[in-house]
Length: 205
Image (tube, rainbow, N blue to C red; front, side, top):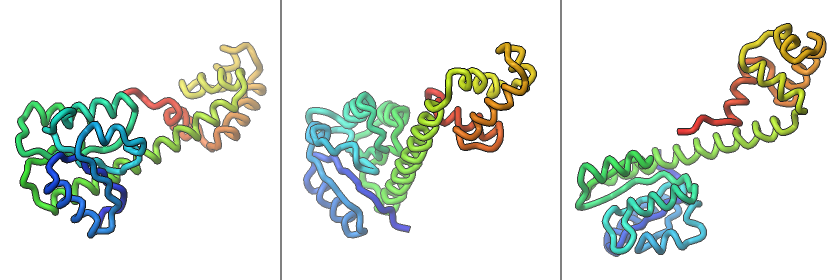
């Protein structure tokens, strides 16, 4: 299956840059090409691509520097690095920074397309998770202060009577708050409630 999406190419060699662009465009992909890391980062739409094919060694900003600056800006674009003169430390640094792969030139079109497909899938997964997080955060914000207190104890696994004792309220009041929390969070079980809270508060990587 051919990957579909927008691919950005950052490569200082015009022959390689044009060859890659022609290959991807022939498969129906949107392509934006840049001759340098600075030119790419100066493009206000640089964060809109689904995959970035990024040369490691370029005059001015190298690929690893571009990767670091994108991370600083919070641009979650999956990167496939390409290089004719890579080494192990570079590859390790790139992969630790979240790259999809680090390909040595010459590489086969088949391998490149496989990695682009993986990158596009990762970008879509990230967008899906971001949407779930925003929705969960909005639902949490709709809870009253007391409901937030009950929620915190619920996700700790406390039973209604224990929550009532902790907060100095009746078990019936806890039940009412619990029903309201479930309705506002749009869940039907405590397990789903815990997942919604996790979506709203993702663990740092």
